[in-house]
Length: 78
Image (cartoon, rainbow, N blue to C red):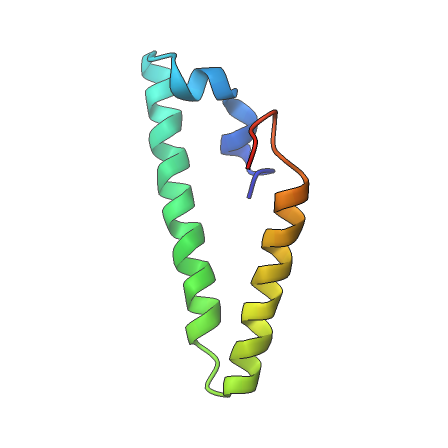
């Protein structure tokens, strides 16, 4: 997710402080992207019919979260 084009176009300072028309548009696109991403993650969890397969998907997302936790993005502390 952090490698997406939206994150590459915005610095942390611009996300929080800068309010140009371009930055506002990018922040909106970033928010839309994050909503789609979250929906996709939920879909990957609830779609499998087999509970064991669902458990494997959840374990996968926990592993992704662990990796993300040890590699902060652009100076943001998670």
